[in-house]
Image 1 (spheres, rainbow, N blue to C red):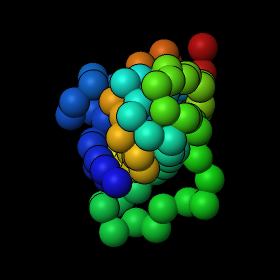
Image 2 (cartoon, helix red, strand yellow):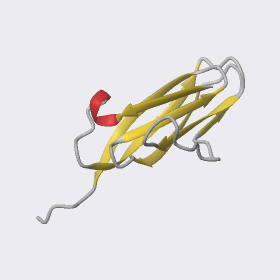
Image 3 (cartoon, one colour):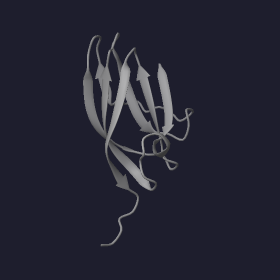
Image 4 (cartoon, rainbow, N blue to C red):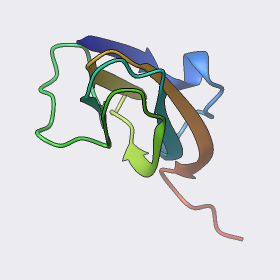
Length: 101
């Protein structure tokens, strides 16, 4: 099992004030069956949800899209169970507040 904790603004250029991100989650190079869960988290001690974003079997490439809220300080966690590579592509961001036009 892999648990990865990252602040989105530090590593992938998500702007400050982002409340959620639209993303594509892809697994590839799978050796065994498993699943990936992506969720907002304050740290690696945050409880992992009982849901998954991507389920996969051996020798597969599988993708799924998700809109994921960020934790209050901008973090997400990625939990992968099984042997795989995980790619996350941020397609868009959603702000906390809308500015009047």
